[in-house]
Image (tube, rainbow, N blue to C red):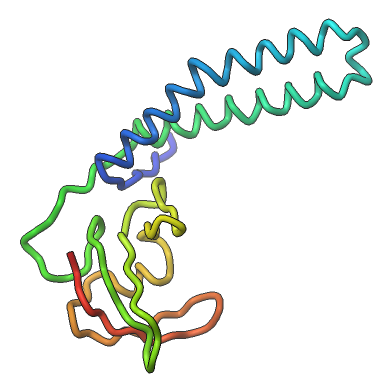
Length: 157
């Protein structure tokens, strides 16, 4: 029996995945089935691009449903930890790139809810891996695909 991967996430992150799953099951599935019905009515399926496209979308939707169900089933909710002053999963960390970079703030979340454009980085990312366990004032070397950088932690919330 395979060991299931645990997906650490915030309560809000789990709720967001549950909403996406609900939409896929109740709305998107029906839309795709309707597209397939319409495409079948065009006749010969061997040269029917609308049918092929609808079947591909159906495969994507069903795959995403399976993925979301697995992530939700194996979710581990991150409890808010106010007792520690070090960087941990679920905390927001502000740092400045040395020697003269701008301040950047990221929330460290599980991979299931990571969204760099919203300031949420995965605990599996190079930046988060380097920052976890560090404290305000620490200078940290971060190895990224774009090269090494040095940052100083300004605040942790």
